[in-house]
Image (cartoon, rainbow, N blue to C red):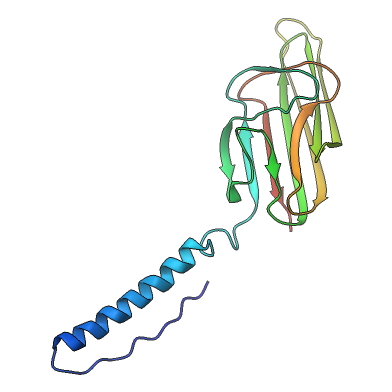
Length: 175
């Protein structure tokens, strides 16, 4: 961003009129800067789109229920909601998403990456190894999305038991 403005020199005998001119110029500059900050040009116009969130606690989800990653690490454009578990694309473009899932020993999860209700990528984390075996699964997808589309994770097969801290959801715009 380039901030250009002109301050004219003021001549006079330091009367109230001269001070008034300075005050007017300072107020005009403040108004201009405030307008830039308030309309988001300072922060969001050129900021990259991205988010990263993980599950704060162990959770069990029924088939079709959106997984909520409630601890947000990064969230430019406030496009990810830690309340709903959904990411809404703020811009059209090519996006990459990553899902990491830690299943309980003896449990399974079937993470689906959904865009507006349609599954676009699948992950199976089948941890049938017993009491002391922990299994983390990972999946990535690159998708061309339109502005306003909603992306989320849900189990597409059965009930999922997801462990805290090691289960996360991330996304970023590539172009």
